[in-house]
Length: 448
Ligand SMILES: *[C@@H]1O[C@H](CO)[C@@H](O)[C@H](O)[C@H]1NC(C)=O
Ligand SMILES: *[C@@H]1O[C@H](CO)[C@@H](O)[C@H](O)[C@H]1NC(C)=O
Ligand SMILES: *[C@@H]1O[C@H](CO)[C@@H](O)[C@H](O)[C@H]1NC(C)=O
Ligand SMILES: *[C@@H]1O[C@H](CO)[C@@H](O)[C@H](O)[C@H]1NC(C)=O
Image (tube, rainbow, N blue to C red; front, side, top):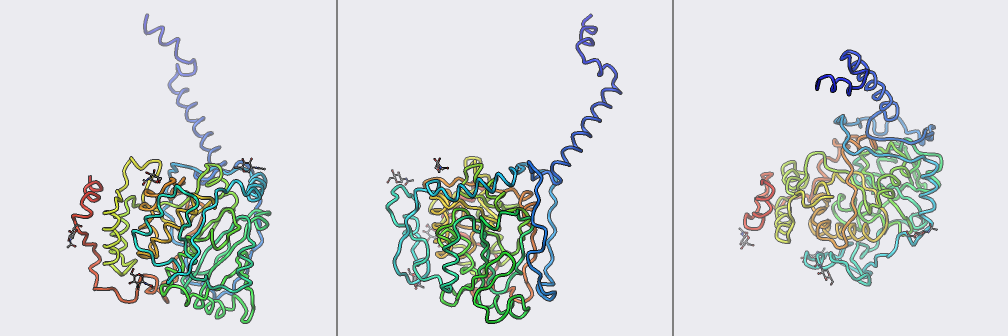
């Protein structure tokens, strides 16, 4: 009797196992077909068809950057947090209106305006930390520019007149090739401006390959306006000069409202307005930044930095990590959620130029000057200690791979210059010998 009742309750088509499985198979196949049609890569979803600019933005001479290959993507199949794009027309209008509404970016952060020995003011760790708790908006925060940023007058005017979305990048030491973005929408160049910062070495390379003519006062390569930085007046280390536009983009472009920083090893393949809209505006984030593919703890990144000689001053790295341990840096744990990692990859940074981002970017820049330009190392320390809290969107690796193509650096010529000061203080074994009593707490928590 019980059995008979159970049978009548089962849907009719499932009384035959074969029919049931066939239907299940059919629906699954249909669903998957539909899913693939909507999103060819499972990570990015567009709500409407999109018709980007197809014509080439610039024709390069064939000799320029011929040996730069794209690195192979990891081709991760899963996508834990897919990104949804609204229709391009609506997005362009919304961003355009938002950029005209300055009250959406208030209160404004006030900056320290004095002359300094260095661009960032050479502050001690104690001085730098004293600005982390920002409860009084009348305080002037140190944020670079304590020496002049050396660019030409016409370049400065161009930078100040960018009042929408700025896309910025930099090539110091001829380390990369200038690449044009792919997939720009038809209105994007009216609302956004593209600026590439270069030094004299890079400029010579561009002259050599006849990418830009000699003696031309203003340079443009495709979408990019090229800004020559007279970097001999700044830091000795080109990597340190590179982090000025990377972290102080809101000050170089004081009238801009949003920015995208993109390392020159990456080529953007999605329209910048769509990215700003879906990764920053729609989730009300201050900043969106790409995650490191493997590391979640700052110490893992510091150890890798020493091991792979990404920074040759191992003593300096050790001192930095010990100082952060002492000042209370913790490894990543569930307690830090919604932040899902302590280590960004930082090749792609999207920002809303409001208080949260501007404060964070200034404080992190000060850490970079104080220790070294390896920006992943100070990231979690500043983020976790900063008040107000940073509203941060951490971009998954598989999403980044759909947003940008990564190319190898120009390793042959200048491979040794980006890695740190010319002479390490002592020969490095590639290991951090941390003072156990300072970092014991951190390491015990990290190793569980
Ligand atoms: C401008 O932004 C503010 C703050 O986000 C908002 O309250 C206001 O409605 C916006 N004004 C317009 C005209 O969109
Ligand atoms: C930075 O400050 C330290 C001491 O606080 C000093 O030894 C060093 O010379 C200063 N560097 C510059 C470039 O002024
Ligand atoms: C930040 O400053 C405010 C006001 O001075 C104070 O009440 C608060 O305890 C401080 N927070 C931290 C974490 O030091
Ligand atoms: C390690 O740190 C402790 C506490 O800060 C300090 O007393 C000690 O001198 C340090 N040891 C070394 C070898 O630097």
